[in-house]
Image (cartoon, rainbow, N blue to C red):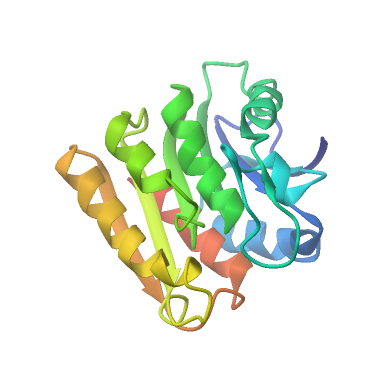
Length: 207
């Protein structure tokens, strides 16, 4: 797993984000946006996965677009992530966009490491995920959720449930006593992923 690092290596705050090839060109822009909007001293670790659909999905599921199924490799990925979180004197936040946002949310159900979750446009339509949330306890106190206002207007019947699912998830987390916001952004899923993720991290860092 390749690590792209920005910020201060010794900083007390560490932001962790899973990324793919599609994210690499905009990482510095995202980092600068977080720094400008928080004024905080932090270390930003962008950890690149090799197989997006396999490495970030919590369990196996059929493909929803294209031919590539979801491989259920999130547990192995989380084991690698934890190797970057060994200094417990530091404060860790985990976040991501799309399937990486879903992975961040799922990871916070597995371990006590993360103070907050920055899930920007997470793939919460993923089969069985909201049901999983109902049966398990999130170990982070703070969660940011967002969605583009056109994301649920898609012809794919499974992905079209994303608006309903994310509203249900926010309601569930708030009833469970979590500090959870749901923010709506203009546009579809592919607009301003870097800035939406930066905004997600900024919110959880300020809580």
